[in-house]
Length: 265
Picture (cartoon, rainbow, N blue to C red):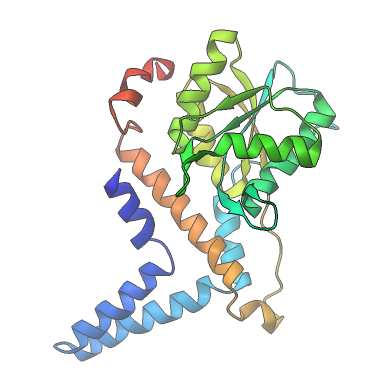
């Protein structure tokens, strides 16, 4: 778990770029040209990854699933909508309670839309997190009810990773005979999420949200640094690292997960 946390911090922008700049500076004390080149690459890559145009290209590169067109296709055997958690703010002062982050609200909004169109029940995922260690799924549930007027049917309260989202969702849904689900998460996260939920024994219909868009490179504004663009680049880097991690290592982090891997057989 510690190794995964360190990788997720230091091998994604902007920390990765800062390491390149700092490392190049140190190397330049002995090999000036090599060190200067490494620092330049770190600075240039930081600039590019922080621009809407290039971060959008990166975003588009990982999107493997098209938008779900329910008006043209019924959900078939699907029995539930599973929403992957994102994060929440502890005790947001303007609300007086903990509230979902913008990323979590994007997923909730789309899940509410799917529920209204299909009538399918909703499962929310996410265990204890942040300093208060509130169950994320409970925070999502309260927001889904208060803001969208929808009650979640199931709450998965133990997970802290996408793989745990999958296996602990299976722990709840499989005994009920539910294996066909609509899976809701961001488009850049969907490829890894589908892989893991299929490993956990689900038949997944991808329901991605928050897709890449189009930016014209001829418009200089899209080549200027922007913090939201850097956030997208960081998220996509994180996903590629996750795909690589699970390619070389089975997604079992502790004994509790190992004992429940029967769903992946």
